[in-house]
Amino acid sequence: MSFVITEDKIINQAINETSTTKQIGIGTRIKAYDEVYGEGEFIYLNGVASTTVGDLVIYDQYAGTTTRAVAGSRGPCAIAMSANVASSFGWYQIGGAAVVKAATVVANASVYVTATAGTVDDTVVSGDKVDGARFKTANGTPSAGLAIIQIARPSLNANG
Image 1 (cartoon, rainbow, N blue to C red):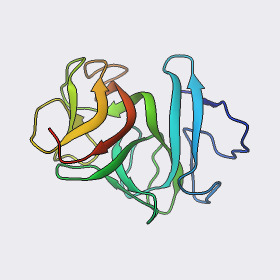
Image 2: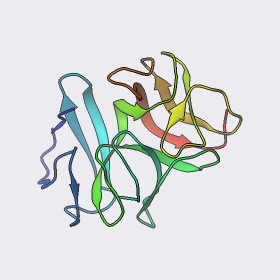
Image 3: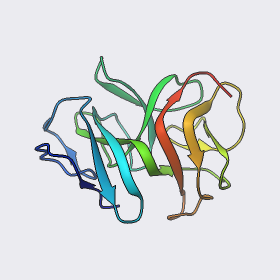
């Protein structure tokens, strides 16, 4: 994925990069375009330990924190665009076609969090449905352990 920022803002950090220095305000949102995935929306956030590309996280913009999502998590969600670990800053996708860490899933299924931090599945688990997200491919696309989902500011609200 090589998203190119499409807005007239000065951004000193590429979408797929992590920085140990904050480059822009936490919670800043931008749009960017990729030739394969189309337009996406992104939010700039703090990292958390063990984050890898494709991890689903929940975030608290007010507190400036992210947490790798697991069963029972609540709050707005985003997908890590880099290995944005603790004491780092990076971009997370909140809109468009996104690549996410996934267990065995089928296309067009609903998205649910699992007990594995950052990983999603299509197995129905009451209260763990990711609102604003839908699988567009089975796992393995674009590569092993990943799937493409369509997201529109997803969140975990105890639904499903």
